[in-house]
Length: 192
Image (cartoon, rainbow, N blue to C red):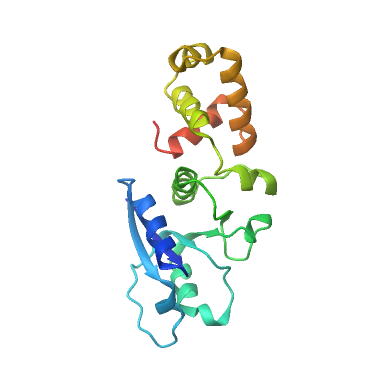
């Protein structure tokens, strides 16, 4: 069971991120109030440690002492910010764009929680990571189930060439190289 902390300045977004992650049975999600964490002198009731802390602001700002305290209790920190997706930030394990698909976010949290080595990505690939289409997700799921490209094509009622095209797009978007990496990504999505 992974303990995941979520902090976002907008309570509705914090709730939505927390709700999306709580769909996974191996995640215990704690949605923390960004406003309460920013107030000096407010006693914090936090778990002993987080496996992953998902935040919406870079660390290192004096008025975010509570968030810094929560981050100090996390094995890794995942930053949701379109501005931060271009370059790594101090204290942050991984940056994802705010428009990231919930399944891609869950995959990143799973990988971060397992302290897995994330494949190196260009800034453009990081921005596209959350942009798998419904059909690309279907193809990825079938390949993870062990189907060949021909079998996946028959199952979906499309040509093998179309499946090949979807696989090329998935590899480009997620910066993956071979079928083993495709299967690993699908497992991180919880499709094993």
